Length: 274
Image: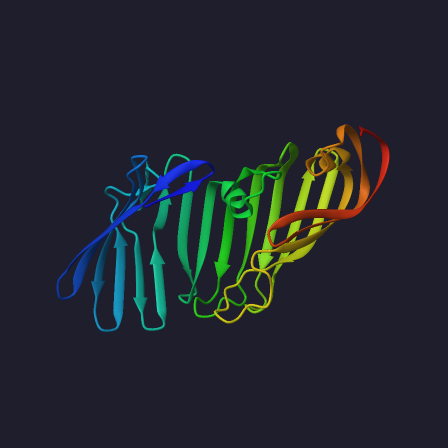
């Protein structure tokens, strides 16, 4: 079978092999795109288990994601034992990306990533007019895997751009007060003369129950200082050559994944062409 993504035809083939004895075994996962001759994932996992314990170890040999070889610490392990979780040395990297996973108080996890692109946001929004660019690192804490309430994190985006608008380093924080409610968001940015501080919410349906909000829609209200007037050119095709900026408030939000912008800015020493 095949699908088309961003005008490119993709195919998929997955093979899972297993070899188990009484108390140990080996799983090999091989996912490929034969049409484009790409290895999407190759993963070898060793397992040791008893009636109340499971220990997993990812083998370092032939580890591949998205057609790129990865390395992992050779003494990595994930150990589940009744109500106790232990994660050690679980650090993966290739030439550009890094992933680290460790346990949090033997009940939850802490995930760190670095070097990943924002392209997945564009894939999610599927917008022809709005494109996000940048490379991000993330620090995410889930205190208890049995109840995601209380989870929180911070995503720092380097060289963030929305279409042609540059924002430098952009920081987004989130927290999960209740799985049945939208997640809380915070935004911070300072680049050249402008400053941005914002708060809002995003709808993430993880409760396992009927979710009352439009999935993945978000709304963030910003207080801005010397916000560049050129930003409106991302949304108004008849505007160009903007200079200067102003102070005020903006609201950036989606409805059914369609991006919208509204607000009021007091502009001084600025110009534009309409």
